[in-house]
Length: 452
Image 1 (cartoon, helix red, strand yellow):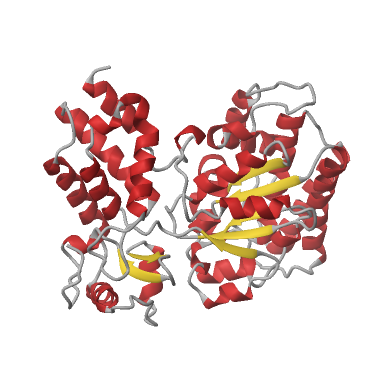
Image 2 (cartoon, helix red, strand yellow):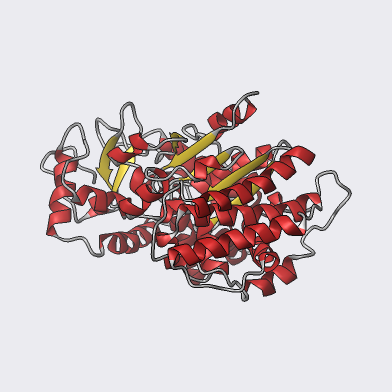
């Protein structure tokens, strides 16, 4: 394999928009996945977990780690709403307007798809029709545009998204004799263009106790009960809601409503980021909140020094590249520099490696150099600085200058957190610091302990 072939392989393996394959995952010391599995092993109750964390920390990878560990214990229904709205609904912005009853409806559709693919089970037609009628009634009550729903087509479109996102969770039967594999994928792909359920378009919000809302929830729970009665427990894993930045929408989903928590089985939901550092999180009922934090690549007492989280990213790189001798391409010192500047965000680190591989391929470079890494980081720094005004910069400098690095009361802090210009860290009690890319040039603290 030539050097260019190896750089091309690295480019393909380090995709910041795709979760890591199981064989390439590095163990995270601060991951809540093990804790969730412990909850699921309890012989009583149905755990309902609200997983919080900044966008890009690797929550999807950890959800997959947990889901794959459970796929032979429960029927795992993995619903990635971000991809669902992007690839099936084809309206990513509508996710910001989704209601709790729409989440439950999509969970029901995903259950229909997963049961067919994994178990070879087809739900009674009257139960599928009842779900359709419940959706139509709610659409009418909330001012949602009417549509001619075909639940079967929606299920195939949902399965098409699953097949590209979580293939190990939908790849055929687990004991019923069916071995469909991805036989439906072609049909599912064509069904994507036929998605006919308007989502995120409701003109009116209904309370949980509304009879139409309760009817739809009951129809989904009837489907859950059938699988749990005939096969095994259902586990809903709902990813993608962390993309919601509006705190009011987040509160409507998890503070003002408990509907998602009333699904009659274990549920793990990736929570809207808006809840991560908002006091309303304490008012969430029905869920146990757990957090996936940024890896601590900085030391609290001296953010100019590398923290223990740097080792995790070096391990991540080694696992993904050991069969192509990755250590000969990027030295440990350069890896540590990239890990540090990622701010502990897995997506940023993966993006750095991908961009480095692209530039190295263009140059036909035998290995990464200090100059090449500097060029990559400088480009990423400029992107990260985009849109920051004087008020943002002054607030970041205030936080960096504070020895305790606490979250200030300034409302701009929430904006900076939402766009990952300000990052939380877990060393001891939680603390905050500007993204290390911003510390390269734009943000200048008022003391000697600034990040170089």
